[in-house]
Length: 171
Image (cartoon, rainbow, N blue to C red; front, side, top):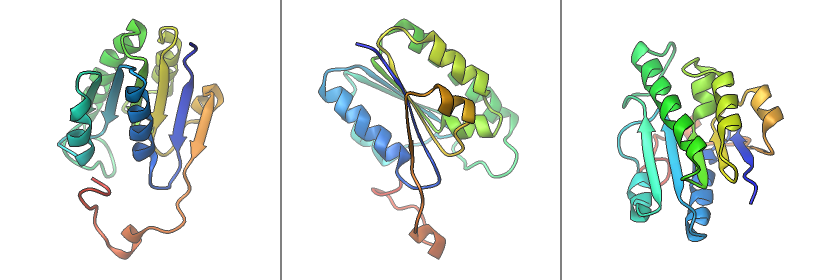
């Protein structure tokens, strides 16, 4: 079966949640899944839920336990480059039928990895590996290469009224 490249982008809420939905669907079909999260560290509710599928799912966060505002630190760059090296081997191996690069578009936007590195991952994929790239700011070159692009558009969000991220909903 051919693997495709999907992108979930835009300023609306739900990109990671949609990626988790695809992961669950793939796991239900018996696919091994690798879920890489750029710019994230710590434990989120999705990690707890997805841990129940640890026999077919690997989830790994590549980031510091902080929200990047402004200029990323050298540590952010180092962690993103380590992620790229590890993921390059994973997509080439074909051991995982679905590989999710959560927030990779944002990592490209901040210059932690390059668009050429993501394009390289697309090219290195073993036959049959589905690749999903999430995050705001999807680069036009990635959109052009993708087989499916979904843009989530924010219309209204309670965050704008000062509501913080809630456990079980946003984290």
